Length: 208
Image 1 (cartoon, one colour):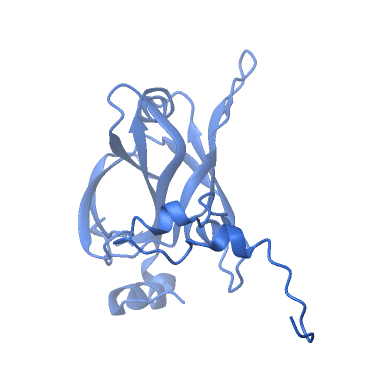
Image 2 (tube, rainbow, N blue to C red):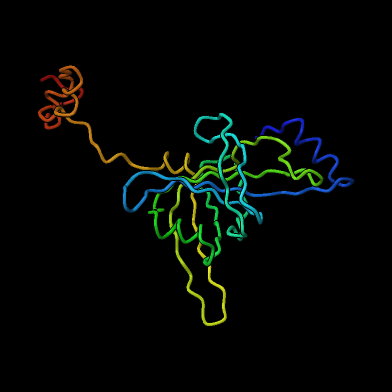
């Protein structure tokens, strides 16, 4: 359940009289192809670049980030809000001609990049943020196809983002338990005879 601040509730309640200005923000942390270091890029559904304060999906604390506008963010599919453990997918469509979009997919390796999606409201009169919001979706990039348009057409970049927490629960651990791995923990010899015991045939219900 999303926690609604008093300021946000007031803005929604008065939306009929005062209007409402919703905006979507995405924040992608990917790996720089040259340095190999993680770098972050923010993009939002507005015309101008802006420094916006949101609640970090990692720490839960307020953090001010630069979000690029210029209509680089074309569309974000509906954010699924479910109570089960199924992996949810969100599609983020970016402008193919925007400089920040090109930087994100050309200079950075976005495979498995971490993504935060925030949905905020702006005051129609002041243009200021109504309240500092927590992310509505945390995930990682599962695919980033670039659609090349025909002559006169319009291309796009689509990031397929899967829910982070649930995808982690469904992953298998490739590391198996073994005596060699166990004894690294301060000489633990719990698995010393595991290989031998596995071959024992115990006649249950019979005298040996």
